[in-house]
Image (cartoon, rainbow, N blue to C red; front, side, top):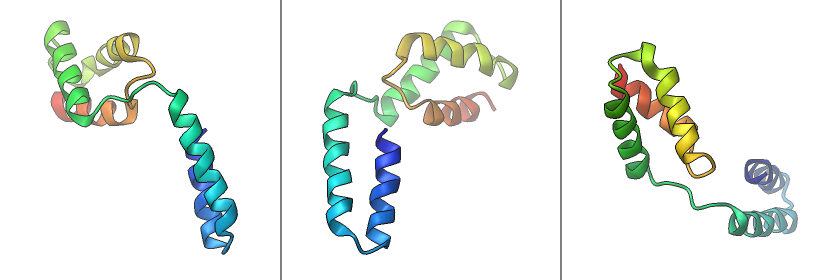
Length: 92
């Protein structure tokens, strides 16, 4: 929902409609109040390293089971695109 509104705000800015862009940004603020706190990059990195060590992962072939463990533990609190990139870097 946030991403959709960010895209809309950017389109309104581009279309010289600042009042509509501001409305979209206000909605983003309300939505973010209801979202769980997202983990920082350092917290994501720590969680990734912890799962790798716990599961004794040794290479990219173990990425699936590591990501599944992360999703089970940190669903809703972690940006899994960032976690996936960090996991790939750590296992690669």
